[in-house]
Length: 415
Image (cartoon, rainbow, N blue to C red; front, side, top):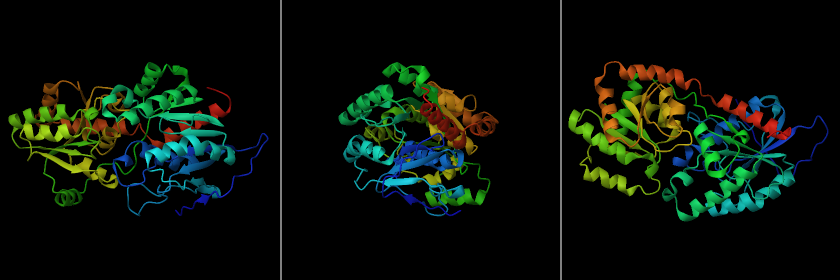
């Protein structure tokens, strides 16, 4: 399918009357502008929302506000297909691309708060969807905000001072002033009520989905070649995510060290992901525990490779203390990989009874879980089967349909 894009050079002429199409804007400035850990999470959410909107909504015209480096297309064969800026019936997104270097957080803040409202007014936008916590202080239209997570409230020390203060002020203000909020989990919805006093009736929980590329890979030759190319051991436990304190990786390391002493060198531990805030204690702990040859840090994993990582792992281990949703466990389950997660924040919503859920603070419980994965006959196969079934419940199409319904309710005057 060929994709095209209509670039808006001038403000569109406003329409009126009962047959007027709804004009909706999407702030897509955080659509990933480079291959980094930012591809995960919010960027994937924005990407898949854009992919589904035109297919699922025939009653609105969409304008997408992009950064100067945001991609329009991806290379053939990569996990994520081209942005569907044109679909059936010749309809297209209107694109407004910033000339400012909005990959710089300070510039993006200036654009969002000062320039975006002017562009919204000039474009005749009736509703702006801000998909990452914050909308403009002065908004000339209705606003819907997606709350991805409130980690800056729960773990403030994991953020730099400006970043923490910015998020606290603007997210609180946006949550209270937006016409409606979308939370990507019930856990995040509860946090909005707890920290910002937002009425629960103002929040809709809409779960992210999982891409079709995440599926079991049965070709042993493909998996073997991937192991060879990435120099991976035959058996390993896998973590995927940013290396930062709230991921609780020190607990996992201590549990793995005990497992290693009990079970020998049967399994390595692979901690895949970009380095976030305060990551140095993690590397220090590897040395203190004598795990230099047993723990592998491959760094950032390209998104198109993730299905191969999940399929080659014995299990995904995810001890995170806090997640707005937690895509890696869902992706691993869709690949038929057993998952072990922390019984905390949103992770029980994702996994339900399809994985092992462990107290995030009990090192011995994590050690026991790792041992069980190796010793209990049929456990991994049972978790894999349940995980595959559970993953089918999460689709990006459903997420888009529920989001579109929020737009319609807000524009119709509902909360």
